[in-house]
Length: 116
Image 1 (cartoon, rainbow, N blue to C red):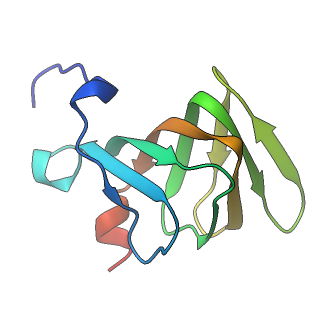
Image 2 (spheres, rainbow, N blue to C red; image 1 turned 180 degrees about the horizontal axis):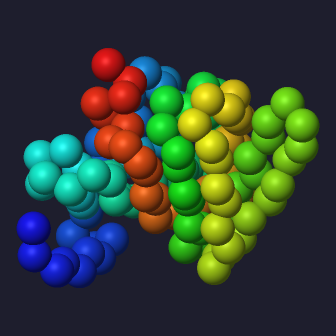
């Protein structure tokens, strides 16, 4: 795999699997590219909520808007330029606020493979 750069303008978004809300993902690098991680972008419409038991370690960087991530022990809220780490096996609720949110993410290993 070569050194690469990705921009949200070139991302191809699709509805987040198993979700009914307006939450979309766009993998830029995943298992098809031969590396050990998935890198992509997320887009959350205003006031959306996603409940997930994480099958992978997940790092989310907020690019626009604001998100809150709740687990059994606490809640963190992140805005532009802030990073949220969510460990594998953790049950989380990710909630966007009134303006929605755009994120970048990195997972290890590949989230699509781990969810199968």
